[in-house]
Image (cartoon, rainbow, N blue to C red):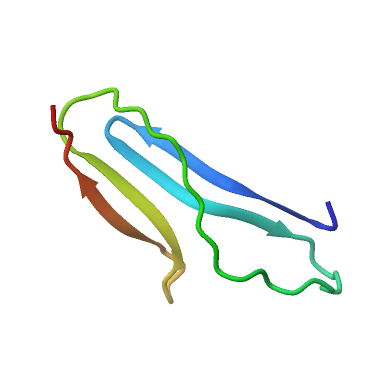
Length: 78
């Protein structure tokens, strides 16, 4: 694994979905790989409830260490 792990973090709670890029790097390692360019990924989503869904995309932490999310509300149309 070259000292790091990655993937997509996905959590569901009622009609809220929290999504983040998950990565970990071991301390005291010399990084020899370049940072990859910005890329896009997609995922399948199955509607299981009525009403709107809220997607919370993790953006990082603010100056106080609190998690920051970009929230998008998507209405379910039947």
